Amino acid sequence: LNGYPQCDAEVQALVAELWGDCDGKTVTEHRLGKGKVVWGQTMAQVMASLNLKPDFEYTSDSKAQLIFIHRRTAEEEIYFVSSQRERFDAAECTFRVSGKVPEFWHPDTGVIEQAPVWREENGRITVPMEFDPAGSVFVVFREKAAGDHVVSAAFSTTGLALTSGTNGQVKLQASSAGSVELKTASGKVIKAAIADVPPPVEIAGPWKLDFPPKWGAPATVTLDKLISWTEHADRGVKYFSGTAAYTKDIDLPAELFGDGKSLRLDLGAVKNIAEVFVNGKPLGILWKPPFCVDITEAVKPGKNKLEIKITNLWPNRLIGDEQLPPDCEWNESNALKKWPQWMLDGKPSPAGRLTFSTWHHWKKDDALLPSGLLGPVVVQPAEVKKIEL
Image 1 (cartoon, rainbow, N blue to C red):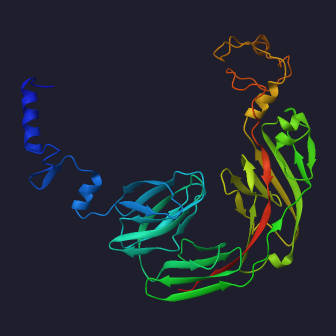
Image 2 (cartoon, rainbow, N blue to C red):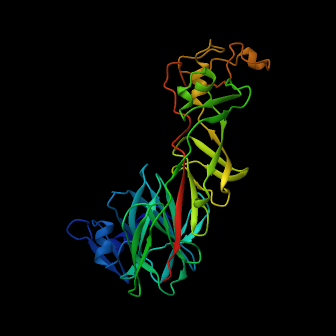
Image 3 (tube, helix red, strand yellow):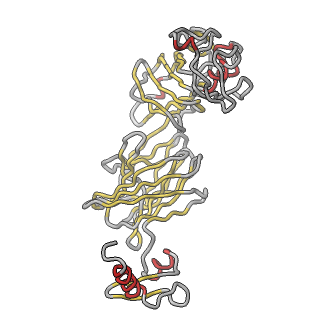
């Protein structure tokens, strides 16, 4: 604003110099010095005129919907790629990077691994990628490419996958029998097969289910089969919200163990968060599908103790409390009218309610949310074979 109104004339002069006769309609470019101003063209048209390929693009038979962010350091190219769909998806993602090895940095687990399959064409790198529902991953390019690597993989059936650790060792992991044909950057064709994989071991009932005290549920119930807590006859179980623990002893045959074998515990459907312990060893918290965890190092042939703590959401307990007489007053807007005296006195609810909120979120006839371990729960064996390039 300094020097007004002369400053406006200076701005107008600069605009006239930069844009010239470019009006975005009949004239869409104006060159000035070493650059040019473009008006009335899309970014894609501008990039095409410069013969500049997109920084990121993808193709997907499953019609994946991906978005990305890209930042650069002195030595690294860092992409964050995010799936926008609540389903498993796959895509071939192409990055405007050359001469470096793509790495997957998984934000949910902290695991870093080299991409097992990738190829470089016309100064860009294409990487086949798979996504969990609403999944995301950092794709980091930092190490110079050296030696041979796999550029394509053709699997004979589902249940086969390639993995690669931080050292680049490619492995074939198979949960079912099948074969794969690999092609490398140097032109090699490598074939590998898994002749036999043991079938999954289903973990059927009964299950012992323990609830914490003072939350309306019995201390323990036994489930002949896995069901939603909302389907249980006991009202304390039906309306329970919080964390409850499933325990069960499982027997695993000796043929599932040995070199080149791995075991994964698949919990199936979970509502909503699971914490897994095997023989007392904590194996982490699972908070999104797939609800699977590697149990290879925690189990042994024969008897094993499995404990799964499940935490659900709060609405069911709030809806359960709505079955009881009211213990406070609400405005028509569903906001609390005033603090109830029993709360100000530090006493429990006279109606026997276990929860209290300052907003009337739920009514007694609202639908309950599925809760608990829904399964099916299976132990999935896999055969693992190293691929020598």
